Image 1: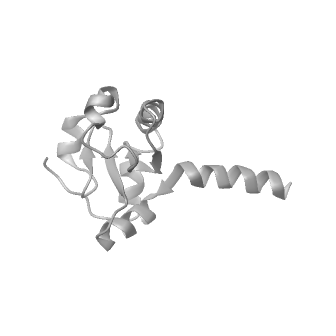
Image 2 (image 1 turned 90 degrees about the vertical axis):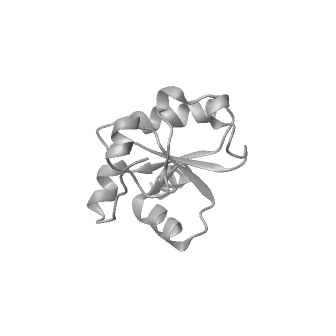
Length: 121
């Protein structure tokens, strides 16, 4: 039924964003979120979304999030649909009482959109 679909997809939009929306905000110069690449440092060094901060999902804690304002939205991504690192990171961040969304598609989605990647730390 339409009301079930409305509820379902509205909830998803509260918790997800896509590569195109993230790219638009980042290129606009005034992001209202911190973009976290939750993959390993080696994968981050090889390529990542420009402007992202590397914070592997296994290292997320109150201490590793301390440099970000508590009310600042954290947007997480990993390798792509075949990876659940972003989901693990989102769970940890939410457990710490922080606002979080997932950038669906991850690096694979970013590439699929034709957006440039950065390399190095």
